[in-house]
Image (tube, helix red, strand yellow):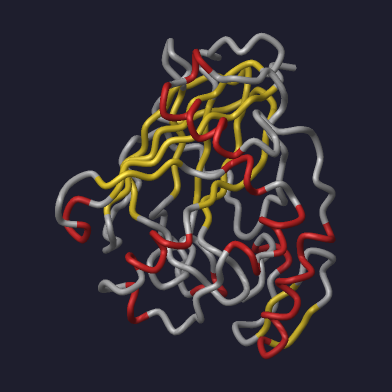
Length: 267
């Protein structure tokens, strides 16, 4: 599967469409995935763009000590975004996988101050590379691995999720949007505007450890490292790498903590 578009652009279960809407057979999807990054412009500059170590260090320290006040680059929205709007911290539902405690800090790119009440909207595939809520994925009506959290006074949100799987042509990633100026009510989020669209990336070495475990080892997709992922390479993926650390001694049971800081504009 290449980086797949929204459901409105989906073809039959045996085909995928690239972002320009052209239908392609699945046997070509790996090749198209490598060119997907060229179809979307890599806008903006990183929060520590080109300074991966500095960005990772800032994420570990929290939102208030980010080293640079510049915009985190955007990446292509990618497949299967749903305006789910459900505010919840635990997005796992019935999906099996290595636990992932994800912390996202949102800071003002002009001042480096944490942004309160920004809505961080995440979605990603399960251990076998399948997204929820999509006819072509066989997951109609499912809502797993999707959710929104509003940042606290430190500009941070936390999600309980699992380590994402892979699908052909893409390295491991989590999709993210940051909404500013909306409102929470009755367990949902509405209004405001999108101030950032991007992807969060794991580490190849951690991928190898995770994908040796069940249920990831049942995924037939060939492991794609970051160095072979067009979106990571062409859209400044190093600026939104996750800082990963083991959460305990048993990887399958305890999983990882993951942190990242995103610099966005309020307007």
